[in-house]
Length: 195
Image (cartoon, rainbow, N blue to C red; front, side, top):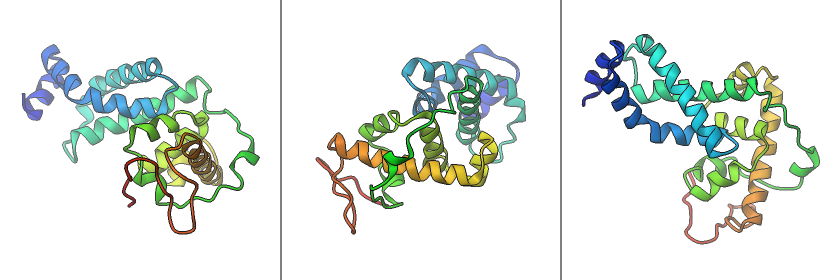
């Protein structure tokens, strides 16, 4: 089924068109939700809630960009709203944990596709994980993150810096990456190309 037919069917609440849209985009959107969620069950709940919003708001899609991008934005906002509603964003972390670990800005975005790294990101406290996902993966600015999460822009910046440091420490401990040198980090196993 073409995207145009799916959209037309979804606009008239056609169940087979809704199922086709769900089947086409849910695997990728589950990946988006999984990065924000604590576990797979939470991610699946976020996915379901997100698709309910997609179907109820499909009339707002104006074909001014990729449908997948529009759905992805809804999923990201759904994940954030679920975290805020459950007050899970307010986890605190010892600031001393982040000190002493050198990190290069380009390391994090360039290695996000590796399954092991995604699993390590999920080990971060929810606040750090959320800011890291929004900034490094979704491309939000710190100002946008502050607005969405109801935090100061400076808080977003500091949480991102601490998230990167903590993530690098986790990657080193799990032997996915060697400690950063002045030039660049060294990875165990297959090299992950940097940006």
